[in-house]
Image (cartoon, rainbow, N blue to C red; front, top):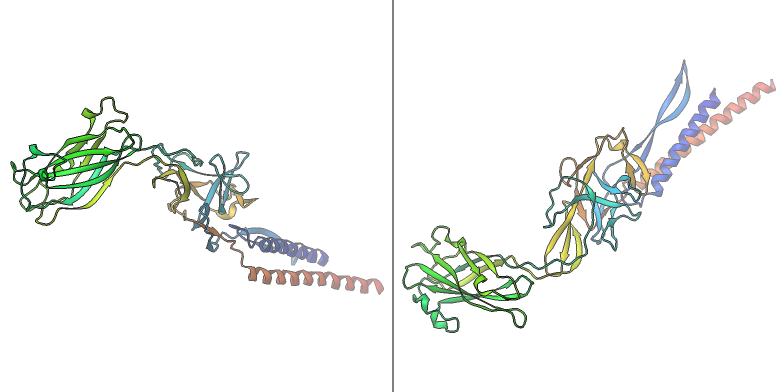
Length: 408
C-alpha cells in the first residue's frame, strides 16, 4: 500500500512541476495568466491512499501594464477579455491585445483571429451595444463636407458712427463699420473666403446689419457678393436681444444657378456677441466644413472606440471594441495562442462596452505582461522537487523493508 501512496505523490508532484514549468516558460508571454495545482488526499478506512490532483486553478489577477509605444497594442486595465473570431469562425477570449491591421482593413492578432466589437454607422457613430461583429477599418477617403453652420462671437463697438446700410459697398471701407474673415468650404471641399461686414444701422438704434461676400476657391469658382445675412439686435445694456443670433443665414441659392458647386447654405450663431464701447474684435469663429482627406492613421480610445484619423484633421469612428466578462473566469478553458473558450463552468459571456459593468477600460499603446511571479515559481519548483525526492525516498525505504523480510 505504501508503494501506491508514494506513487500518487510522485504523480502529483510531477503535475505540479509541469504547471510550474509552464508558468515559467510563459513568464514573458503577453496576457498570460499563471496556474496553480491543488491537491486532495485519497482516504480509505484508517490509512490514506495518498494524494491526487483535484484541480488546476487559473490565476486571473491583473498583470503589470507597460507602455509599448505602438498604437495597435492594447491592454485591459481591470477585468474582462477581448472577444476574437478565429479564422474557422469559432469565438475565443484573450487578454493579449497586440493587434495588426491587414491590407484589407481587418484588426487581427498574430494568429489571424479578428477582434470583435460594435460597428459604427455611416456617420461614424457607435452606440456601445447591439450586434457584435468583427471590426474593420475602411481605407477609403473621407469626403468633403460643405460648411452648413458657423458660430461667431465678437464685440461690435457701440461708439462708432451709424451708417446707411443701403449705401454698403464692399470696396468702400467708409460704407461699413467693421469686417472680419473666415474660411469656409463648398460642396467639393474647396476652401473659400467668407468676409462678413457689419454696419451699425442709422435707422434703428442698437441694430447692426450684416452683409456677406464669398470668394476664393479654384480658378473660375463662382463668387457671391453683397449677401444680406440679416440683423443683429442688441439690448440697451449691449447684450443680444432675445435669440435673434440664430436666425441669421447665408444662402447663395439665388446666385448659384448653373454654378459648378452646390449653393452654400450656412446658419449662423452669434451667441456671446456684444455691443460694448470697446474696439470691435472677434473672440471666436468655428465652422463645420472641411475638405476631403485620406486615412493617415488609426488610434484606439480608452472606451474602445477605433478612430480613423484623416489628413484634413478630421476623425471618424470605425467601431468600438467589445469587452466580455464571465461570472467565473477560472472556469474558462485554455485553448492555446493566448486564447480561452467558454465552458459551462465559466458561465455565458457577458458582452458590453469597456468601462461598463465589471469590464475594465482599454489602455492603448500598452501591453499587459504575464502575471507570473518568476521568483515565487522558482521557489515552488524547488519545493515540488524536494517533495518528489521525498516520495522517491519513501519507495526506497519500502523496498529496504521488503528486502529485510525476504532475507529472514
